Length: 481
Image (tube, rainbow, N blue to C red; front, top):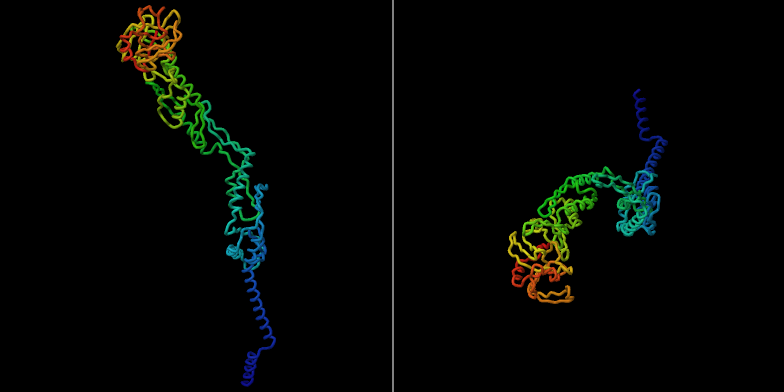
C-alpha cells in the first residue's frame, strides 16, 4: 500500500515538471498574440498622436490624415477667396489670395492636432478656426474698409427707418409712431465680420437699423422735457415793466433732439412780443404832451422814439426757455435816428419824453428849455416860412449832434444855394432843420415866420443862442407843435 502511494506521488511530480506538448504550444500562441497586439496598439497610438482624424478641417481646409507639418503646408498653399455673403447674397467679392500661414504657425497647428486627438480613429466632422500669427492685413483692414464702404453705398438706395418723435403741436405733446426701414446696421455687421473664421466665404446675418420705438425711455425723457418746458416761466423786462411769460402760453410748437436740446418755433412767441411792443413802444406813435401853459396836446413822434426788434427779442426769450434762464431784459431796440438808433428807451416819465426837453411853439414863435422838470430858459424865435411851405416840421424829434462853429449849406425859397457860417448849430431832423443863431436877421416879430421865416430851422437871437446851445444835449427830445 505504501509503495503504491509513493508511486502515485512521483507520477504527479513528473507531470508537473514535464507538461504535455500541446499545453506548451497554446501558451506560446497566447503570448505572441499579446505581443503583436501591443505593437499594433502602440502603432495606433503613435499614428493618432501624429495625424489628424479623417474628417478634420482647419478654416474649411481638409487636413484629415495629415501630420502637423503636412497640414501647415496644405494651409500655406490653400487659396482664400475672400467672399462676403449677407444672408444668401454675395455683397463683396474680394481678391483671391493664399492663406497667410508661415512656419511660425506650426505650434498652433500642433495645438489643434492635440485638441482633436482621440484614442481610436474618429470619423466625426469638426472644423477648427485658426488665424495666421502674422495676421492678414488685406482681410483685417483693407477688406473691412471696403466692405464698410459697400454697405454704406447700398444703404443710400434703401429705405431709412424713422424714429418715433416727440413734438409740441398746438400746445399739445404728440408722439409720432416709428417706421421700420431696410437700411443695414453697418456697425453691427462689421462686428460680425471681425468675429468670422478665417476661411474663403464669410457669411453674415443681415442686421437692420432699428428705429427708436414709442415706448423707448428716450421718448419718455423727451416728453418730460417738453412738459417741463410748458411749465417754465420767463420774466421779460421792458423798461420798468415785467411780463411773466408762461411756456404754456407762448410756446405752441416745439421739438426735442436726440441729445435733449429743445427747438422752439418762434412764431407764437413773436406774436406775444409784438403785443408787448404795440402797447409799450413809442416809435411812430403820438405822445401826450403837457405844454408850458398846462395844456395837454397830442404830438406825433418823428425821429424820437423806440421799438422792440420783435424777431430778435423773441429769439432771446426762446433761448431763455431752451436754456432754463428765468429772466430776460429787452436789449434789441431800434428807432428812426441815424443807423436806426433808438431814443427814449431809458425814459419812462412824462409819457416817455422825460423831464429834460426842448419845447417849440410855432404859433407863439417861442421855445422853452427844461432840465429835470424845471424850465431853465425861454426866448422868442423865428421858425420856417409858412407861406411857401417851408414850415418847421411839427413832431417829437431829438438833437442829433452839436457843433460850434459850423457852416450851413442848403437851399430855401429865393436862395437855391446858400452857404452861411453860424456860431452854434444843433440839428434835430435828418433833412437839416435845427437850432442856430441868425445874426443876419432883422425881423424877430411873432409873425415874421408867416412871410419872412427861415428855410425850416429855428432861428434864435445871437445874444441868447450860446445859452440855448449850452442847455441842449445830444439825444434830447425836441417837441414842436
